[in-house]
Amino acid sequence: MIDSIRRRSILAALMLPVALAGGCIVPDQRHVIDGVVLVAPPPPRDEVVGDPPAPGQVWLSGYWNWVGNRHEWVPGHWAADRPGRHWVPHTWTRQGDGWVLKPGHWERVRH
Image (cartoon, rainbow, N blue to C red; front, side):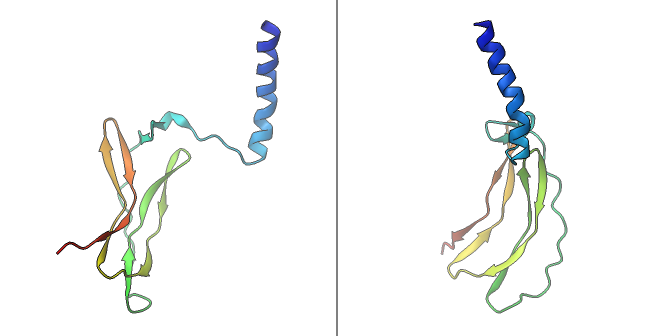
């Protein structure tokens, strides 16, 4: 039994560098519990929007995304408008002791 445990420990220690070298990095789970991020997102960045590059384009604002073990800014961009729909931006909402990202999406306009 002890040999079996020792063998598994040695195998795990040998596999870690192989996994890391191959790009298989396990994210730091200390900041995420059951999909809830325990680190508050920073304030949104100010973005220079300017004029649309073409008629019928709408601005989809940037947002903070949780990647690995930190927030990373995803810049806004222009997209084709969808008639009868409006863009609902990405938003972080409080959930218990943490935060959950609700993805941006197109929503039907209600009359």
